[in-house]
Length: 298
Image (cartoon, rainbow, N blue to C red; front, side, top):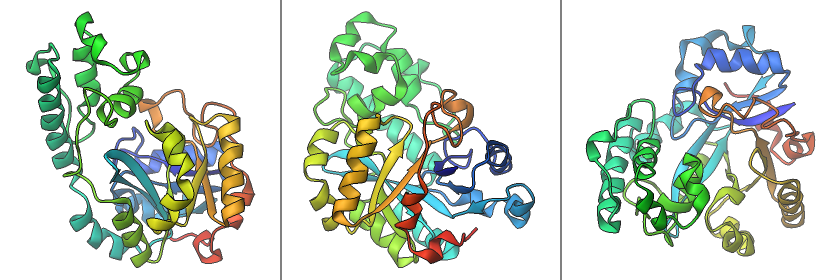
């Protein structure tokens, strides 16, 4: 069982690094990567001094860097990097978690004001050390039925991840937030990962608001931004989407990755290794990676 896309409380997951390692061992995961957002904190946790006692499989050092691409937020997965070098680069590449959440909250509030959303800012409460403000803004937005007319997708009212992708990150939405001041470009993220000896792959293409347009140009996007490949299997993908991306990577000679995007209780319908129950990342994916990456670097 392979799961190279998971999160701990070092970004927006619910499990500690130790809890995640134990869960991965119990689930029978043989190749694991912790890919926290913009953070390598899990690999600095004291538990990593004896991680092999908790998890018998191969632990591959990972990260998920949030980027801006043509006005939309996308993510880049990095694997097998030198920890000390990337840790030093991150301070100039991305904002600290708390600062990013506070700045984003101000940008969302300004977007709500411009769009004429009826809401009470006093009701927007969240812990910037642990979570984004987006769920709080969505809860407040749906309290007033008239606000729903501002949504480009009715499903955005029901799920915060949908609200984020289809409204906040979608330039076509009245609630769009330009977050270019908060994130690096895809090319900059890929270069940083490469400079630290790692590989860089585009994360979960099919969850983006402009996925159909990105898919048409995917070959150019990968090449022009220095990416090594694409995440082909993800908990939110349909079987057809997985097959499509696998075929694309084989045709283009690109690396493949896949994972559950496990967040613990923050995404309770997603289990480690199995996603929503049917996820199965094939070993073929890892055979596209350089052998030294598969040796594990944690």
